[in-house]
Image (cartoon, rainbow, N blue to C red):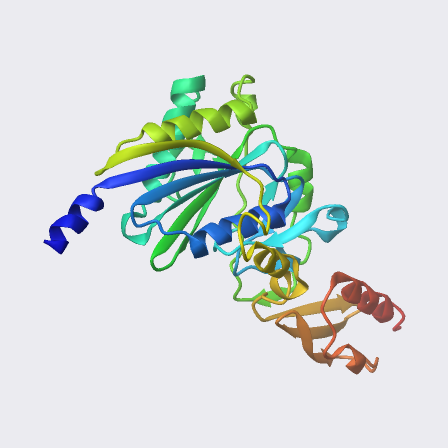
Length: 318
């Protein structure tokens, strides 16, 4: 009898669309992780929609010094997310979507198809899903990248949609500058990108949120669904107990830089070279081909200023 009751109860799926009021990347990433960690998606699914002000978000297993052009990132926040995949640029003309489900019914292809259908029905924008599960136009121009986190019992798939983002700033920020890094970290794959407004200038963030949200709520799966509608949320400790702890971790140097996979970086000048071995963001060894003393760098937090200083010192060697 208990088994029959459980089957009856689980035949109904509750669906909700959440829209974050925040444009702070660390607040939104923390909110996303809070839902992943604390929600029960046994009989419900959720779509979280969010927009960030200017920032670069690297994948969980990436090296920021390999992915980000720090010369252009002076006033841009750099964050590390919990999912894998490559580096992305966010601004207020880029829509982020996170699809939460139980691991057993995780299906990111279905989520992407929902977006493709919405763009076609609302704006007659024809897109397709490529082999990497990016959404592309004309099988060439990327408008959406995708990544996921699969746990037990919860999972999520999140993706972006380039509406009218600053492509020039994005290009400058993601222009790889350091070539002399040896690492096993995940390396981003460069793609040609396009804004949706370049195809149809009537596409805008607010209307896109509404259209995708409505399509999500009406999509029928294998279970009867109950529509819980749209809900605006402000990420904070009062509403989401434990939120501040997650946000503080997301903002910390230890998470953003200290979680970088081990790497070696070689600095060359005037036929001389210096190799820095970096683990958890900390310089653990220095090897040089010259007699300049750099042992003081051991146990220091790695940053690009150190590389520039080494270059200046190597330039003095005749």
